[in-house]
Amino acid sequence: MEDRPDAITITRQGYTGNDMARLVRAGHEYFTLAQQLIREARHTIHLQTYIFENDETGMEVIRALLEAAGRGVKIYIVIDGYASQNFSDEIIAKLRASGIYFRFFAAYFKSRYFYFGRRMHHKILVVDGKKSLVGGINIGNHYNDTTENLAWLDWAAYVEGPLGLLLQQICEKRVSKETFTHIVLPPDSGNEKRIWVRPRINDWVHRKREISISYIDMLKEAKSHITMMSSYFIPGNMLKRFIANAAKRGVKIRIIQAGISDVMIAKYAERYMYSWFLRNGIELYEYQPKVLHAKLATYDGKWVTVGSYNLNNISAYASVELNLDILDEDFAKDAEARLQRIIDNDCIQVTNENYSEKLTLWEKFLQRSAYDIFRFLLFIVTFYYKQRG
Image (cartoon, rainbow, N blue to C red; front, side):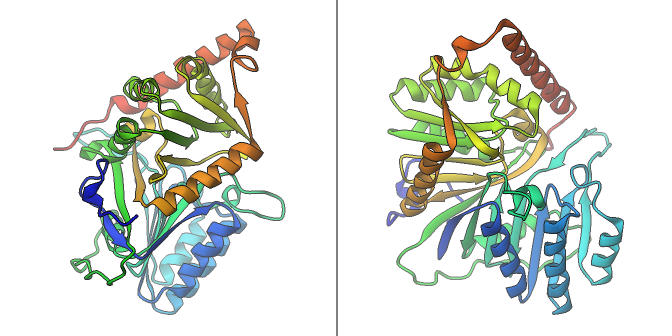
């Protein structure tokens, strides 16, 4: 896209012009690229993730990191203390012995603010302040193509350019007892074609709702079509209003959800909402081959958001989340084409005829119960949170 970001209604401050960006799918494509970036690192690596497994995929990444540390690369790893609580003590000792900084993001923290169960849910890799991967992909066999397993469906964005320095600053805030040099963005490289990307953070405790705002802006600004791919898609009442209003304006809205879920109560809760979506003219699709773990949206062939943010109150209020907004026609059209192929080849469309009208009273009861339980759990998780000024 040749226009500068301030010429587009949806854009706000924070976009940087980058040399390249591409959408990366979970599996061989993602982990091959991630390990290549680690092998090519010369100065620094920041790796932060929600789940880091001790399995085959996890050990491949560990070996690449240890090799990089052996070359003198400074490496900083932060993983979530709840989701990765089974991460091996032996591996931690080996990482630290090699000079790698390692810490857990605290699963539970008590103070006068009394935070309960806050999670670091983002997934990010930044190499040398220049190359970065941001998405929803954890480190483990579920997210990789192995001899026994095809990867869950998920996405990340790979970006080369000044965005990497901004992302490195975000990572540094999670690294304690370290002093980093103040980062200054380099001058424009002179490329005529720039890809405009901005990081977006949701961290309700610190009054950051940037990803939530991006989704609302998308629903307000779209004129033609919106496609959202989301796991655990249980939007709150405010977001539902924006979805309904966009549909009333004539915007074609498609939502791709999991047909197979790793959290069945969430799947039942999602299905309770199907009748509402169908009444409002929303097209619904269920992905069939594997678990869908993706968090991606695009609209009008010009804008994409991708990252760790799920459309529910856990991501909105109880987790640290990171997305990238990409304002670029080529990137958006590629994303839309890939989503269309998935709809055509791997999804079943949900309609009143094949779904709602065939529900038994027992199934309706289960779905409503799951929805109420899930919403109650979200309330419990978020109830004790206080915002910092």
